[in-house]
Image 1 (tube, rainbow, N blue to C red):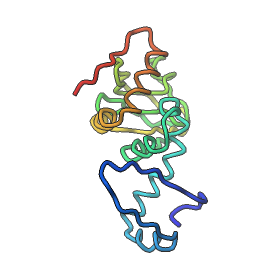
Image 2: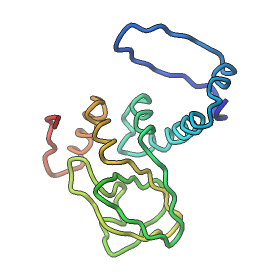
Image 3: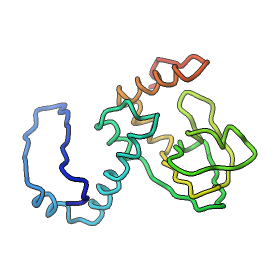
Image 4: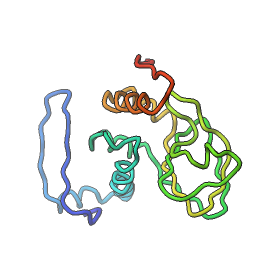
Length: 172
């Protein structure tokens, strides 16, 4: 097995007729001997529980969270590191404390580009070991537009949290 997380299953939605093949864990392990594939699958499996615990993604099903894990990267910053939050990435604070002059930046759970909201840009300093889940803006937007559940839940959540109206039309 690639991980020691125990039994796993998968949900698949077919857009066209398909033939399904079931194989054992041993067979899967043999098929997944490619180091790049193993690394990618392991990374995605390790990110899934982290993503599921973020308020942004809590209400999404496992299939959508799997899509998010495919476009995400977990980045660690040591104590004292300067971290720049830019408009091309969406950053989720997974663990640790940020310091700096901007109280919005040091207290926010999401930083950088924000879907349907004003970006939180600038620099902060890691006051402890900081772990950030980082997603490229273009990748997130593509996934949002192609995933109705993500698009709907995101807008619904933002509408509950924001005093500003959230647009409900797709920008395609």
